[in-house]
Amino acid sequence: MEDYEKMLKKVQKDVPDEVSKSTRFKMPKFDSHIQGKKTFIKNFKNVADKLRRDPDHLMKYLAKECGVPAEMKNGRLLLKGKFRQRKLNKELKMYVNEYVLCKECGKPDTKFTTQKGVTYMRCESCGGRSPVKPIK
Ligand SMILES: [Zn+2]
Image (cartoon, rainbow, N blue to C red; front, side, top):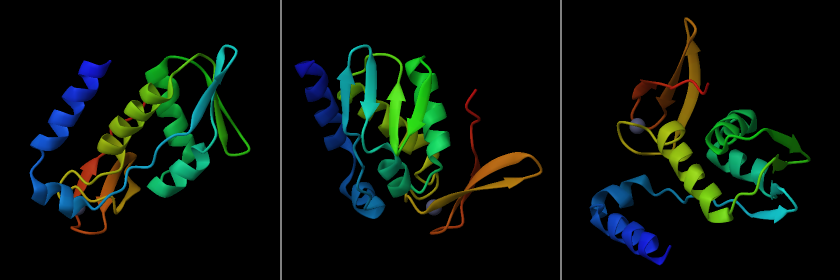
């Protein structure tokens, strides 16, 4: 696991300064704990709000990536399986890359819009638009 962290750090270092500056995006983090055979994400709704995404969409994504059913209750998310916080935050990062950050300029100022049955992610900063991959 330590090697993996080193690798992550190295990858982050390789990102040119300009890119990380222009995104000025602070990645929210899940606060989770395992109880029995279940995992609770305490600040789930809060994270979805920060990303300005529908919690249902984020829930669908996590349930699919973790391969277990999920349920939302009082702003918390319950995953029916044991998952470490590090794994959940890794999934969150993938989600943000795919569904929050603009594909053109890398900023998080995006919104989902639907046109003729296709959902697009539209960027309020640069006007860029890209189709959103459906979660199946
Ligand atoms: Zn953009």
